[in-house]
Length: 284
Ligand code: SAM
Image 1 (tube, rainbow, N blue to C red):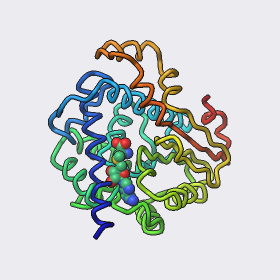
Image 2: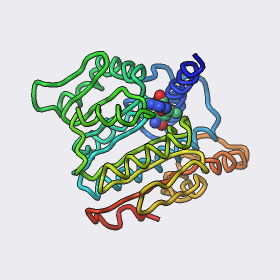
Image 3: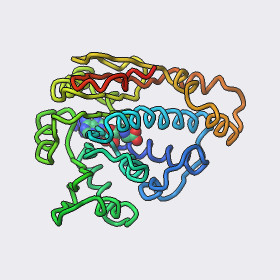
């Protein structure tokens, strides 16, 4: 059907994101020793503007995520919705910034692929096994559930099914919770994405929502505070020593194209703070 074809095109976007990140890391924009296990070859060259755009996206999202983990002293949960082949779990493990539990949700076919890579690549599976205390590790073709990392196959447009699965795998609605959607809500209708944002607001009393998207998409439903920065601003706020370093990696003819690209995107975030974690989420 048309819906199946459309969903298949959406699923394919997870490869696009990973291929671009793989290329940028191969050029030295940032380090990700795990992404090679999800996309084997570096692939064809990407324009410097694209690489710089991904650099700003990844650093910007990581900055907010790490600030939340530090503020909660990792006594929290992270839920990455539409995670695709994202490698954040392994980065956090290596940086001693692992939350109590890290959840990911994506379509079942994407989840099965990701689990296959994890099962067949020891550098991916070892950290999961190491952080698991009992002999009850669930790692079959469609599910992964360990003490600290859980991957769920579900459709984000079917919230009750997703919620049921998250709860089955010990989602704790009492813990401060960070929800991340990185280029995901844009693939849903406004009513589906606002339903998801509202579900997060209604389910957790202390939470942060980080969304990376095209500028006009963010919706405020049931949140106490919300802010957004376009990526031109984010780029200008990144550590200038590092920005200087990456700008020397590849020659850029003139910055106009990069400016145009960055101005179409933004990072937005929203918070609710019953536990009064305080200023953590008012960064800017
Ligand atoms: N967040 C990852 C990143 O930034 O690298 C992947 C981004 S990719 C552009 C979008 C992801 O959202 C894909 O993995 C896709 O399968 C997932 N996605 C989109 N709509 C979804 C839905 N309704 N249910 C589950 N996953 C969905």
